[in-house]
Length: 100
Image 1: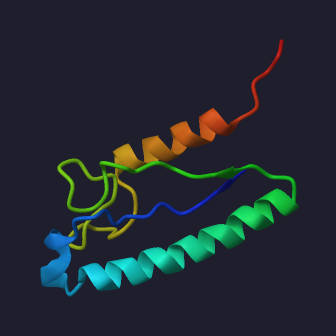
Image 2: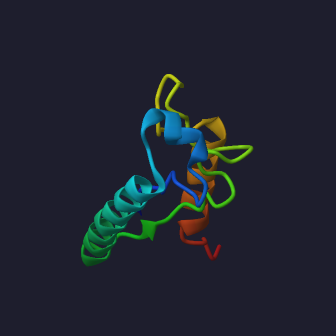
C-alpha cells in the first residue's frame, strides 16, 4: 500500500494568519498536494499497490482537535498521535480481508 498525504488545511486557517498563511496560500498548497497525491495514486495503482487516503475531516489545523501539529509544535504539519492512529486505521482498513 502507498499512503497519500493528508491535507492539513480545512476551511478555517485563521489560527495560522499570524504565521503568514492566508486562505489563498492554503488553497495553493492544497492544490499542489492534490497533484502530488494524484501522482502517488497513479504510481501505486500502476505498480499493483493500493493507494490509501486518510480522512482528517473535522481534525485539520485550527480545529478543536487537530490531527496535525501546528506551527509552534515540535514537528509542524506532521501528524499528532491521534493523526498517526487515523493513518494506521486507514491502512488497516485498506488491507485485504483474509477469507480463512
